[in-house]
Image 1 (cartoon, each protein chain N blue to C red):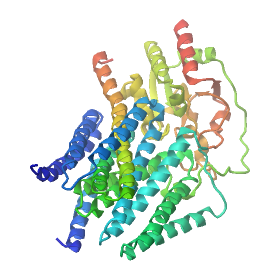
Image 2 (image 1 turned 180 degrees about the horizontal axis):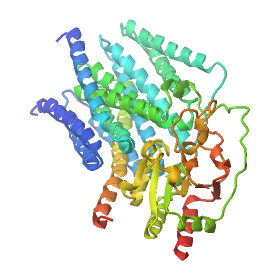
Image 3 (image 1 turned 180 degrees about the vertical axis):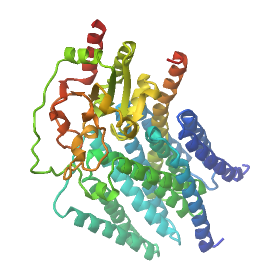
Image 4 (image 1 turned 90 degrees about the vertical axis):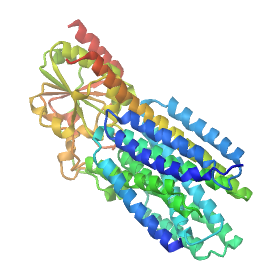
Length: 105
Length: 460
């Protein structure tokens, strides 16, 4: 594929992905806004994959240094984003179980 | 060695599929927790399979970087208290933006081709998101004054910095000969300007608007990641799609939050909310303090009590005591409801999370619009550490809060405000509610005070 075809392919993909993101979020109740913001924060942690590739293909020391920083930052984004989201959602889970154990009031 | 790189694309496709499923599950309370696990497993596999990328070297550096960054992220996220979650989201989002900016820099240092304009755009967005998120983090963490920081000619300077960043960026695209001197000078300048703009655009934003800003930077980082993914010589579509999904979802989330606060985005970024005080308004009346025992009696003989929590409850970690108070009151046959303002706390849903942690059932929590119809017939409203979200000044034209939908607690027969001191709310605006005839102030640490209330009620 040449660059122009590539650009249009990307545009098609971008359009569909944007629509997907919009639709998935539009049904979310207010109470889940915080975990969801955190969850989408985790998902853009896929930047780690890009950082790994950038560092892995780096040749000069400067590129390696920047790539190393990118991997550190990306890895922190992924793990931190996951743990924060997990911790927030855990509370919803626990309270749900408590409710069931307590039975109807 | 056998070439296993053919598995990369199928795995990336599966990753995207699970990300979408994960997000969808996260949008319902019952399936939310499994949602993040789906996304997490997908992310882990995507990371592992990336090691198979053809031509990849520096494996040791990659592994060390993952251990350092991952270790920091894990420990920081595990150790922080629930009240600190909003700034952690800001911090980790900023790091993602920083990673995206670094990737752009590497792409721009390498062979320049038709897609370098994408790397430049990704770089500027990533750098702005990084710098802005760090400022948001510092403000929320209290390591920096949360009030808006303004100075004369601010918007002119901001625009100038952005324009300079764009100009240096376009030089990077237009002079692709790869002349080391040009790149060597322009590239650092470009990123410095982008970082500076990120700092400058966040400085005038007040603490009350931070959730909106964090959400927007979250969308920014998503977009930067997508642009970076496409700027590679071999485009990485996992990054492109995941990034765009976050960009779109984050933008919608940002607009929803702004709408919940009745603030337009222009207002958020240029309004310097809370920086200016309205003049010529004299609040009538005085603040009237009250004792715990009197409040306990008032509660004991009420038919219906509504609790309106705010950030103060989160700071004092009072949610457990509040749950006890609810139980004590309900045992006496008193109806207890919670009034949840969508932006109470530092993030939408903050209160829901804390109350869920303490074990308060979902069916006790009511949205602003729902509960506003009920205050008129309510005997006692307990305002626990909320301020701006219950400020009737929002109904008065000219107030900086004007137009923001608030909890109309002042319509109840009695309003008890639990508050640490006489200070103002996060928005820095005087609260009319505290001076109303039917309002009493109960000063002290929320956790301690609610604990005393529970004890007093048990004795009655």
